[in-house]
Length: 415
Image 1 (cartoon, one colour):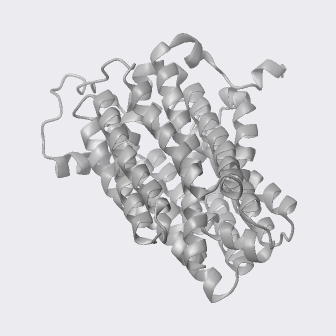
Image 2: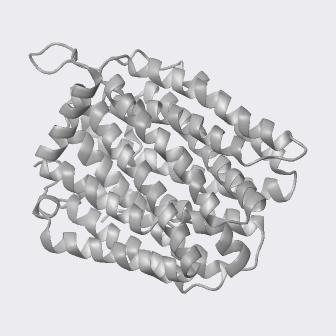
Image 3: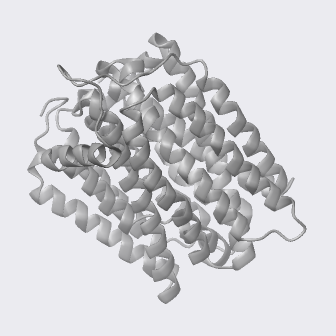
């Protein structure tokens, strides 16, 4: 295989001006979101000395995001997707400002951090389905796999740079300066999105635009997912993996107690999954020629679980970083394949709702995974929590490898 065939496909960036602006907005968002998560997690752990409190931060983001994702999915199939992105990212500015103002107080409090997370989670829940469902219109369905790889790359580069930058800024210039940088990036995002063309949803073939109530619209999308074995399998395997094997809530405790290192090391741990994911995304060209993408998804979940098991036995920063990097690489390969398959096998008038279902299970599953890791860590230890979660994730991947025909038999882009 030629080297060029292993490298990421940048055709969507070359051919679509609108996608370039959307991609820049997404990259800016991911960069500052990575910084914000680390900054808020470190601040909460300093205030409470509790991994459960850090896990609760993820829950406070995920629960309103889950509700907003459902609403945002329906709205994305009714209204212009560009407008939804613009308004929701503007609201996100307010949540970031609250993080900053709380940090400026002589004695910062925990509750404003949770309040800001709730506002930010809800705003993100509206914007994400709009962005995902707009992608086919921006790049064409023939380039969805390449667009998914590029989106994964921007997400993971931001995930590497953001946490490292946050850790360095907090250790140096301080928490307030870190939040100020985040606010500047958040303000830039809606300015970039203004350059997009109108992105109205397409009506069903031979039908009228969506008219039924919001609840019935959501149920329609949910029924479509249940009736499609491939889509159902893609959502459930990811849900199981993130519930069992999401270690992020433990990283402040892992860096502080297990490794006996400070904020910069914690930032490095948060960046490790993204570092592995960047390498996986850059070398993702091989995925274009794969005829069994479902088997790649299953294999990625197996590697994810094994990586968390290895993390549980790690006692140095380097070993922990490597285990988390393998987890990130596996996650991003799985995510790229799942995103492309969901978009290819969903009609445009349902894309918003399917995107919201996919992101809802990811968001709520990640929050549940962080909470269960935090609780098991409190009952036993961080190492035991990681060992149990990683083993469960590996077993889920093995069960799908043995039983899920819908995933194993999917060929290329065809059912």
